[in-house]
Length: 324
Image (tube, rainbow, N blue to C red; front, side, top):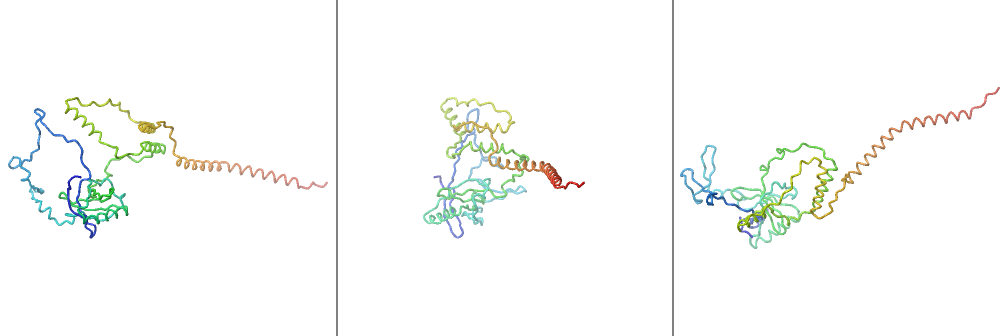
């Protein structure tokens, strides 16, 4: 495991849990150096004092805040460390919320919290099991790197994990983003989109990897060995603008199934049963109602004529002959 980046405690009411904080992720991006094209000399960044015009070592560099007047106020490390913050030495839990109530946009870096010493074992286990039983996560506050931050405590297997979170006022309003105007989407296209989602199958997160980094490593290995880097395969010509959305969805379903070695046959995509049944029942009801409404007056007229003829025949049959 990596070296701890911070040591302190979790403050859970009157319960204190000594912990050490370790990064839960690592950056595996390939780093580059800047160099002089003419002689391959390395380019370095120097910190130069504007007053003296010469480079200054780190031990002679302080921290300050520049006022609107242009003056700079010096802020020392001791002043930062002695600020009256309850979170300066502890991760202070402020409440518990359902996990699904947390917007993923707010979540940042992740850290594992390890129990620090034998005295931390029982309260650490207590908090972990309480979170498991309640199916909730803890919202916390902590102060690292000269700023107070918002955090989220949750369980990952048997460990407590701390996620740094953005403050509410750090999240931009999504209504400022230009989005298409609301429009109606046919049920057939929605059904086809769901079929495409099903065709992707389940995602195995452990099987995903950084293909760009792998390709870059092959380029570096080839050049280090004095060889030409591998050339990319000839890419297919980009397709034109999609006009028929349904055709594009059907072709996507075929491609997804082919990539998984499944039958790529895609039949016409009628509306799903739940939509068809509902629509059919409504259509039938409307058609029946209209037919009845159209035929009812004619039937009534015919019934009246028939009744009149029967009445006339009955009267004729019962009439007595006149006496001479």
